[in-house]
Length: 212
Image (tube, rainbow, N blue to C red):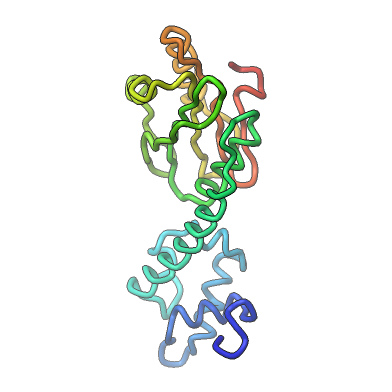
């Protein structure tokens, strides 16, 4: 790495450095390759696994598993930070929303619900994480959502959450929540412009689907 730089190294070699050492009868390179094999060689899949999943590989204890998880999270945050400098400040369509949230939400192993607050020109005033849940869902209370929007003087809102399963299809709960937010937004003169579901490399937009 010192001679050629980190970019010249394979994924297995980089993982070997993070692991530091193997176990008796199993060199670190073999442990690293076994870990990659668990994720079919896909670093995106590997980053979604909890630390406990790494310990299924012989030679990786919880301490090493946490180190790997931390390193992958740092890499993800670097991407998000880099993207943030180019973040679309005016929301014109669902693609703008997806570009803003894809890196942040695509690889998560749990659901997060975010609220984007917009002014009258659809420029972003603020973004707020409303809730964080488990593998199958998260709680988003319309009262909490609109209390934040009204407190900030937002002219409109956009809801965004992810599906860790990679299935972009809205659930019944997603549709019910969207219906309630749409109705409340009309009453409070703070309309819901879209509800975006991020599902890996794909997404679903309630606005694009004509459901708002």
